[in-house]
Each structure stands twice: as C-alpha cells, then as structure tokens.
Length: 152
Image (cartoon, rainbow, N blue to C red; front, top):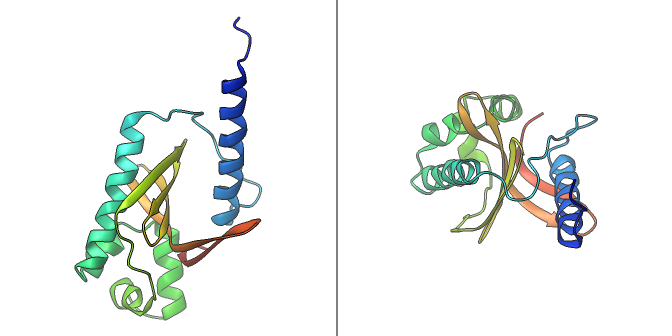
C-alpha cells in the first residue's frame, strides 16, 4: 500500500471543502455527497459542461421549453409551484443573469458546479443525463451560494 502524498491529501481536503459548499448550496440536508475524488472522469466533466452550456444557450435564445427540459424534476416543480404556472412562462419570470461562457467545471460524483462569466450553475446526474438543479447562483463569504432558481 502506498503512503499518502501531500498533494493527494490537499486534493482530498479541497474536494471535501467543495463538496460541503455544493451540499450547502443545494440545501442537501443529511444526505452525503458521494465524491469521485480528484480528477473526475472526463466523460462526466464534459457531460455536465455540455448540459450547462445547452441550458445557457436555450435561455439566451429565449427557448424556455428547451431550458425547462434541462431542469432537474424538483427544480422544475419548485419553479412551477412558486410562479403558479407552467415551466416556460415561469422561467421567463425569473431574473437570471446573462451567464456568458464557462470558466470552470467541477464534478464530484453525480454533482457538478459550472462557473460561468456571469453565473454559477449546479447540476446533478440523473438516469436521463445531467440536469440543472440551481441557477442564478452567487457566492457569499463563508455562506452557501444564493440561488435565484433552485429545487425544493
């Protein structure tokens, strides 16, 4: 058995810290995130990034139905309940920022965070693929992200 390296320990600490931030941002109570560790498989990273970019493009094109198809079920349901209308019109009522291009994609098991020029998205991997669970998210010092759009 190999002895742990300092770099490996730092990577694990950083992953745990990011996972706690992601867990807090999504309001995940006692459920623990399963971490893939440092260096998530490239297919997960590219899949999360592609889904986030599709969501951003759909919003930019005002194609709310396409954007709604990319929302996680609980996020879509919470949006429709809050706005008391179908997802498309409800999404149009949200004040989501212009996201811009992806600056970083971080994947932790079945959870991902995309940092864009003007927004941060959180995604989860479902059987049907990556879905946006929160958007319009801004970091807050020593607190969870504040998200305009999120699930229940």
